Image (cartoon, rainbow, N blue to C red; front, side):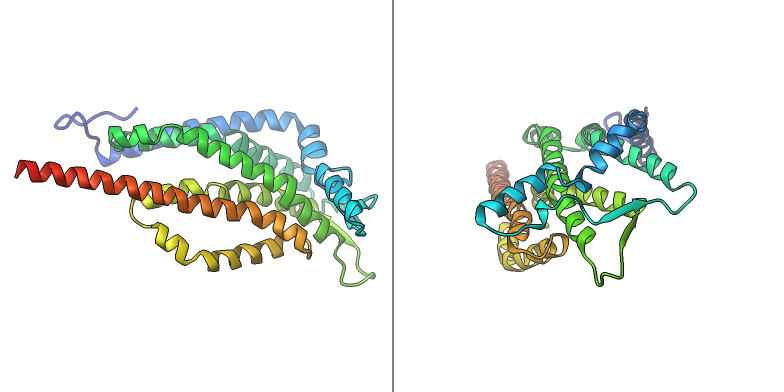
Length: 284
């Protein structure tokens, strides 16, 4: 553990801070490795059930969209028997490498709350007591948002992307035979990207605290953000309105929630500044 410097017992030198950060990173890495080792031993579940789940047409997302299409009287690709592509490994160590890296990423995703806890333990001593009180529940809220985003990525973004890209053909002369690493990357990016996107309210909270973001800025760029969100939704989903709305809707909600959070934080900061100004006025 880092030692306090002699001339200022409540403060730490730069090297002491680096030492403290090193131990937090070591503990975070150990947690990821331990959880990843468990995931490594659960190979059949991780690959056959989790990773290759969106490849099977009995996946819950496909069944839901098939029922919606049937109810609306629309012919849907989600009602097909199987997706028209195969997965293969072209490298000698391709499958083993995919096994190792998938286990590591599984360790990070499952161990995200603990990693966040270690980072918070490093940052929190630099906050005032009131700031720490106002930040209670940070780890729980940030972890909840991350897992909600990860589930959204897995059950919505990943299957929609796989269904569209796996079925897309420029010609009947070309067959889709995807490399294992490419398929795993698609699922991983969908899960992690959505997990991080769902942290938007937390990010806006801290950016507002340091004065980099205001509700006015968020409102000013709301229309631009809407266009960007719709474009991203169009890129990662099949080319139909329903799928794009399904992906864009929760992100738009998060954006609106972020505006509300920014307002609350700014209001609280103004009250704090007013109290400080009143105290200084009394002293003078």
